[in-house]
Image 1 (tube, rainbow, N blue to C red):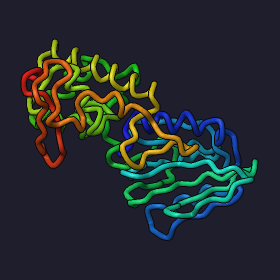
Image 2 (image 1 turned 60 degrees about the vertical axis):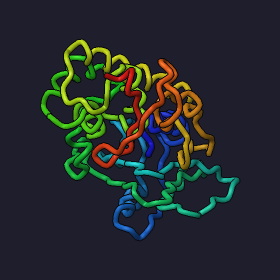
Image 3 (image 1 turned 30 degrees about the vertical axis):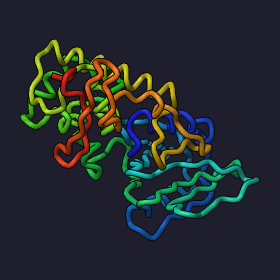
Image 4 (image 1 turned 120 degrees about the vertical axis):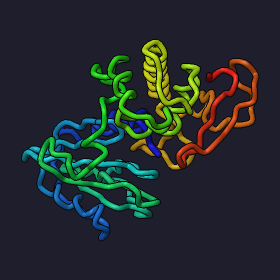
Length: 267
């Protein structure tokens, strides 16, 4: 599932193609979750923002299109000189420069919504999520007090998006490994929260430099892939030696999510 680095990379790649462009035609898959795409016909796209794992397309009429990529969603830009491969395309928009913006989603877990600007109550996770992991609002203190509100496993809390928005399975495992914190703890001291906060920032910044992680379906708008999978130190490496201490990494399903960690380093 695309996480913050992948969604932010997509946003950065899309901006030159869609910002200030007028949508001249719109089409959507019959499924209800994609029908909102048709509401963009005639609208001009303004700023393209990201909140956690959501993309926000600002429109010139006081509305926004909110997009969540689910597990396999991707936005593609297709020049007017190239034919669009319609396989798994769930929505497409023709822009006033002749290019097409297409939304492809193989497994159909993504969703498009058009809402009044800032009204996210129809997207419950976005409505209730915590500060974006790359924002100035996300501090070690905010993380500390956010985690104190729950007694669930730390890994589960991070994936809930409530203490911080943008982390998924990959970067939660990586950040916990960097901070030397076990995914099974339920509360952290302020000192350990500071270490986790720094690790989250560091891991996400490095992943952005590599264009995110491509393990299967993630693609940028030009169909290129990310390369951070070559830098993963924990996620997906169960049974392999820890790169810090040599102990074999372990894997366990925690609250229905596969989790990898080092039993020696992550106390």
